[in-house]
Amino acid sequence: MAILGPTSTAEAATAAPLRQPTTAALAAEADDLRTECADHPEANSQTGWVKSRFETCVHQPVNLTLKRTNGEILGHLTFDLWVLGFAYDGSRRVDYVSSIENIVPVSVSGDDPATWVISQQYSDTVNLGDSGTNPVITPPTDTLRSAPLAEWVAVPQWTVTYTSPDTGGYDPANSQIVAGRITLAMTITSPTAVPWIELDMAHSDIRFDYAGPVAGKYQGTVFTDARVELQLSLSDPEVDQSARHILDAQQFPERTFPSWPGKTVPGAQEPLHRLTDAAQRDANRDQAIKTCKDVWGDYSGTGLECDEYPFASTKERGEGNLRYSARLIDGTDNGKGGNRLNAMYTMNRVLDGDAFYVTIVP
Image 1 (cartoon, rainbow, N blue to C red):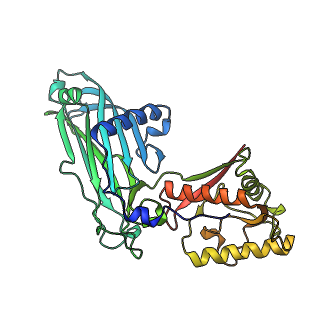
Image 2: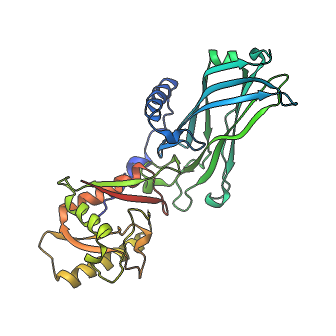
Image 3: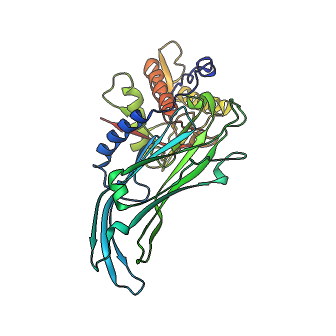
């Protein structure tokens, strides 16, 4: 599959300063994400529903009991926790719109719910093993909100923003990667109750980078738990031959070339991983072309090109690895397929070594 170049370096190098989302824009995005989130039961978990590399949502209905030290029940409290996360393609920033809603207190022993206090505390940790040199995550000025129930009812929502500093310019030798986790802890207290504490109410894994043109926009932030997928359709006339080749390689690998007993090809259930080394990509492509010539002979002047899957731009196509398929397809189709692959890389900030899947639909 032929791949055209990424976003032009001239465009990226002369780009205007990055625009941060306005409060109104963030509120509109939050409303849209909440609507989608309601249809995903996986949102009721610590990691939530990771919609994409740039949006994630936690929605947990909480039902708890407050007790005295002697075990006597003081009351019950129910509420809805929402955490809407937004990362940005083009900015080393992540926003969390956090709220406590539908609060219903029930006093059992005469304790006054007006004295009950809900606290949310955000924190960050850096994953040194997946980060570059001197990784730093910068927290907001306020990472704690602690208020009685009435204040949460009056103002249920607040926003926290994490950023990561960079050197101020693109360095091909240093992607300035900072990998880490943002965690929400919660406590609920009253003057007479044993505190209810949850140190990991919700969390998300994030990555800041300044990877440059290989990622499209020169810098950005992603949620690394998102499933990244290239999807091609058998009924799309622009890439139907590419799609058919991939589907045959995934479902009927023994019928593809090179052919060998027990052959399997990754990408559907077993992920592929991006390869950005130009020399290795060329070597992978040359290997596929040799297979095409061995099987179909000289095809120059026919308008056909040698399509390879897994793609030359994946680590699964390493030297000596025969878990691939090469096939002659229409050159225009091959080029369009390469464009789709490159767009998937840049739209999702897929860096060297990042995993992704390939799905073929009707």
